Amino acid sequence: MKLSVRGEYALRALTHLGLHHGPGVVRVQEIAREQNIPKRFLEQILNSLRNARFVESRRGVAGGYRLARPAANIRLADVIRHLEGALAPVGCVSEKFYEKCNCPNERLCALRSVMKEVRDAIAGILEERTVADLVERAILLREHPAGADDFVI
Image (cartoon, rainbow, N blue to C red; front, top):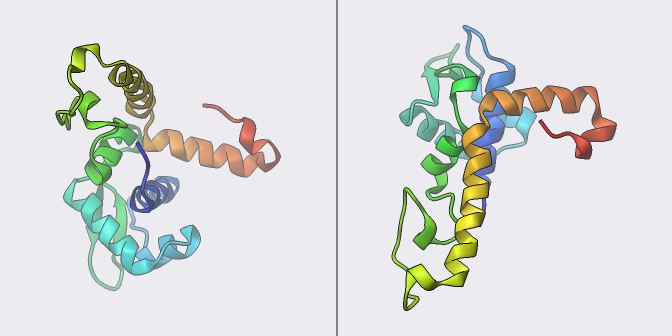
């Protein structure tokens, strides 16, 4: 699995919304500026996240976006699958987006066996992590920037 720029921007935008979660909305311009995301691209991403019910929007002068549900209820795996498709590195090991491969016998394929382990590791982490975890990590990293590479939550 490779996270596209679209997927990265979506997760950064969701983290921003999680950091500013409340009854109000956050303007697209603010997210774009603070996260260094092109505004028009961000609007497309947020529209897709709205259609998938990860975020809600309010139109108009006082418009913007907010999380559609608590950050702890938005799993990273669900967001990535919505935007990117399979979490698996190859289609023949994907549980939700299976594609037949062209090897002679899938059951006996050593590469498939290893790629299934990779898929299980990626999916295991992303199924457990939520936008709330990203928010918590963002707060910790802001408080302790010197040890940023050492944090594991």
